[in-house]
Image (cartoon, rainbow, N blue to C red; front, side):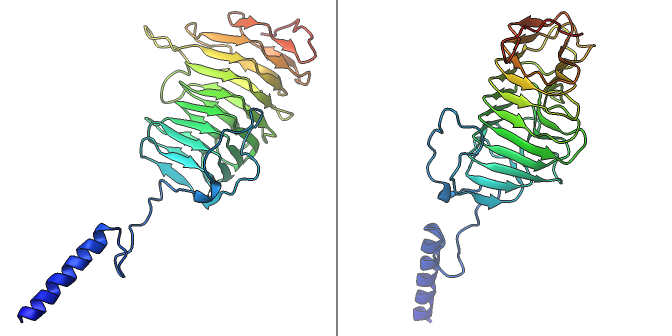
Length: 293
């Protein structure tokens, strides 16, 4: 009996030790990885892309995963081929070197929920969604490509809520009649502190605008920060850049240094006279003689 008890104690000690070193014993396999934080080792270490790169860099091996919801602050998603979309519920999330392909079941390729924030880099969003390729408040995107988006007649390529930035990116081949890019109020409040800079945005035929501005009403005593549209190449749409007529007087709108293609159905600009407009020209250097209200 004493000997049997000794064997039991030894066996228990071995099991505990095995669990402590990661579950290498039969029946004590390692804990399954979190579906929320997939890691793709085959993509390799991150290196900055070529300065002129836009969207997913070529030649990368990606790891295919399904739709994701990120609820852990500071999560980094790198090298993923996502079928569906990503919802960001946590702060300070990073999505880089990835491709998101919509299947029509998700509102957006990347969307921030209330309280979430995300930085998106070197990523391509394509496929079908019901609302937008990227949407929500508190997001920053650099060198992303939004291409061939469809799925809803009024789909928006990118929808910028409060505290959002789109820089050095390319939006093109949008299906339907929605705006390629929309600056609009959201559940997080009026769309202030918004920057759209250095992008190539092509609405093409089919209605809508390359950039549609509807930042929503300002808050009394707490006006939102500026909405800045500068240094972009814009083309297409009924009006290439359009601002709704009833924008609140507190809105701070600055439109400068943009270059327009000569392919708008009606006119390149439809803006209220109060908008700050500086140095907006056609791509061939021609002056915009008429800024239509």
